[in-house]
Every structure is written in structure tokens, then in C-alpha cells.
Amino acid sequence: MSTSPLSRAQSGAGRQSSASRVIFASFIGTAIEFYDFYVYATAAALVIGPVFFPHGSATAQALSAFVTFGIAFIARPIGSFLFGHFGDRIGRKSTLVASLLVMGVSTTLIGFVPGYDSIGSLAPVLLCVLRFGQGIGLGGEWGGAALLATENAPAGKRGWFGMFPQLGPSIGFLASNGLFFGLALSLSDEQFRSWGWRVPFIVSAVLVALGLYVRLKIAETPAFQAAIERQERVRVPVATLLGRHLWPVLLGAFAMVVCYTLFYISTVFSLSYGVSTLHFSRQSFLGMLCVAVVFMALATPLSAWASDRFGRKPVLIVGCIAAILSGFAMAPLLGSGSMALVQLFLIIELFLMGVTFAPMGALLPELFPTNVRYTGAGVAYNLGGILGASVAPYIAQMLAAKGGLSWVGLYVSAAAVLSLLGVLCMRETRDARLM
Figure 1 (spheres, rainbow, N blue to C red):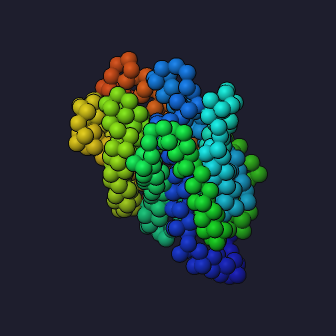
Figure 2: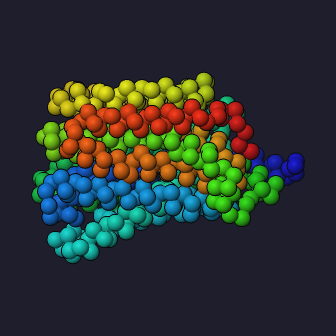
Figure 3: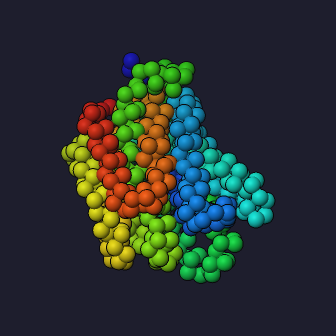
């Protein structure tokens, strides 16, 4: 069905007026959301165990902290279903504003939750509730941000436009780790454990206000406007998604597993292992992570460009094979205790994270039609999080304690094999139309 001249003009005007803001809005939102998420990941590796689970050994504290870390990944698919429903029914813009609010409020409140010594068992309960809220918010964030970028992208450049929300995690991680690094340098251990760790959570309130200001200025995407005019919206997007598009959801989730596993093994688990077992100082290991994540940020545009040039599948296949091999480097590099070799390991893993993560900003939206795209992309992305991230630090901690780092490396390789199989089974989407 053809659209009216007025509709086409409005769509064109919307594209023109918002094009300069769209990329920044998709980037800044994911940067803030992932800042919030990584603040908790870093805190889980450093202080959540002693503050909220003070009884038991250091290993028991770390395992308890990693359980709370995993709660958000269980919540993320729920957030995808919830926000995806509204994103596919009422629009991308308003849904993205709501997801940012949920994430920001949950993160800020974590900074004010008293520890176990103050309110007893209520402390970890409140922590888990707010961590669940973080997961709900982030579950609705990524799919909308990716659609905001890709549904506004010109032909042949969806991989490049879809890269900008993929850059958000790198910047969010740098901001989070950089702030923790500064606190570690300027505060004593007692000050850091008492109140210093709360500062990054409270700072989130300022960042969320910035993100809301930017997102309220953007227009709705042309693809969604066209779907409204063609009356293509469905009443219950999740029912249509699971009834007609379950296979792409599963393949997309499998493809995402390697990204999550590479990231959270090389950051959350490695940070905990480096400080507690290898006896690196907190600030030195945080500094090494900040260096390594720069390589993740550099890999992101390179991989996005290559995915537009050669296709999504070839880039992901190469990245997955490299990730399989990287698992065998974990024990000799991370286990060496040498700062240079540990730094090399972190650089390799996070560079490969950027390689495998960048094409996802375009690939996952391309797997689904407009009327279920928000829900489909978000659900696939966050189901991959359950498989690749929620249990990764916990399993890695258990494997390291019982079998050593070589077992953790095999875990990384196995996750990459699963993603490789998912990528091999999916169609090439580079030339798919999103209108």
C-alpha cells in the first residue's frame, strides 16, 4: 500500500529533524544504561559480598554476590517482553524513555540501601529487588536503542548505524570502572567499603537526567510510522513473535552468548580472581580493565564496517572461531600472574567482544518484521544474556575453585561454539529491508 504525499513528507521531515540526534540518543542511552549495569558488576566483584553477605568465607561471599549479579539477567527477558510490547504497540521513543527511568531509579536507590550490619537480612532482599529492577530496565533498553539507530539508517549502512548503541557499553564500562578506579586511588579500604562504593550508583541520577533530555527530543522512527499507516501493528506482539518467529529468536540468543561470556568472564570473574587469588591491587586491575576496554571500543567500528562490507555472518564466524581459540589462552595468560600477560589476556578477550558484539546492533533487528521487531530483538538479546552472562561468573568461580583456570577457558570456548552454531544456522540479513 502506498503512503500519501503528506505522510511521506512527515516521515521525511521526522527523519531530517531527528537524524542528527538519533545516533547520539541511541548511543547515550545505552552508555548510561550499561554504566548502571556495570557499576553493579564491579561492586559485585569488590564489595557486595562483604557488605550484604558478611557471614562465611571469602569464596562464599563472592558466590552470593554473583548470585545477585545473575538476578538481573533473569529479569532482562521479562523487561524485553514488557517494554517490547509497548515499543511495538505505541512506539520506540516513549518506551525508551520509560526503560531509562526504570533503570536509573533502581540504580540510584541501590546506592542508598543499608548494609547487612545495619538492617540484617532485609538488606540483601532490598538489593535483590532493585537488582531485578535494573534487569527490567535494561531488558527494554537495548532493543529500542538498536531500532532507533537501524530504522533510521540509510541503505547499506545499517551495520554502521547499529554500531552506535554497541559503543554505549564500552563508554559505560569506562565511566563505571574509571569512577571506581578514582575512588580506589583516593579512598582507604575502610572508606571504600563503608561509603565510597555507593558514589557511582548515586551519580547515575545525574546521567539519567541527561539521557532523558536527549531522548525526549527525538522523533519516532520512519519504519514504525510506516507500520502505523499500513495498519500492521499486532495486538499482542509477544504472541505473534513466539507463534511465528521463535526460530530467529533462538538463533539470535545463541549468537549473543559469546559476547556476554567474553565480557563477563574477562571483567567480573577476572576482576574477582585477580584481586582475591592473584593478589593484584584493586586499582591496578581496574586500570588494566580500562586499558583493555579501549580495544573493545576500537574493535566495534571496525567490525561494524566489515559487517556492512562483507555481511554479518562472515564477521561473526571469524569472531566466534577466534573466541574458541582464546579460551585456551586463559590459563597460561591470566593464570601467569604477570601484569603484562594478564593485560594481554584482557585485551584479547575484550577485543573479541567488540568484534562479535558490533554486528548485533543490525543483525538482531534484521531478523524480525516491524510489528514485532522491538520485542524480537530485545528478547533474543536478553535470552542470550541468561545463557552467556547470568551464570557465567558463578560457574567460572566454581570451575576455578575445583579445576583451575583451564576449565574456565574451556567454558569460554564452549560458549563460543554455541554461538558459532547459531550463526551458521541463520540467514544472512545484510540486505534485508526494515520498512
